[in-house]
Amino acid sequence: MARDGAPDEVAFYEADPRAIVPLEGFRVPRSVRRALARRSFEVRVSSAFDEVVRLCAGDRDGGVWLSPPLICAYGELHRAGFAQSVECWSGRRLVGGLFGVALGSLFTSESMFHREPDAGNAALVAAHGILTEHGVTLWDLQMASAHVTRFGAREVSAEEYRRLLAEALADGRAPRFA
Image (cartoon, rainbow, N blue to C red; front, top):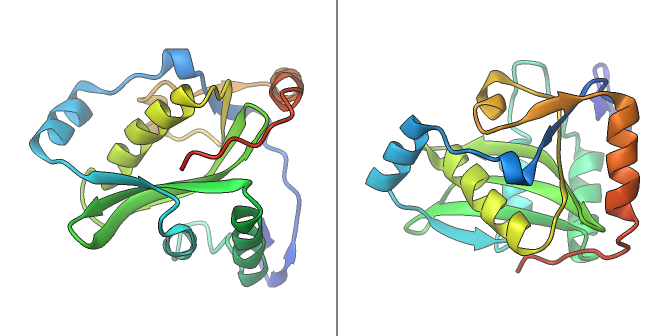
């Protein structure tokens, strides 16, 4: 993460507890299901990765965590095949999405955004399907929020997270979702 007051530095943070989404425990809240039934988005994978990252880097209540060096690093990870985005489109406009890093059977959701109501929720629902299809076993969100807990996210201790992480990384692959 970028450090406040030092946007060109990248600091390492380890959340304890750590938020994960058990893929088998993922649920779509009824209100989200109804909203998505009324509105459809075209889902694409990594067709506008750099744009997703830029939109995720917008102003946040807690400051800007996606500094220019981090944006560049995520772009390089994408070009190397390790970072992917799940995007929701309305016509020709990118309206929601998330991005993350895939290693072994781990996917870390780094950030998400939405420009239209329900587009972020649609990205989460689409990501779940894509991650399940590609054999991801650990979906890491880093930090829990009231929003993601509605979808089944839960917190685990740092010790439990490290155990799950070791299992997911033992797979040794970097899944490409496109």
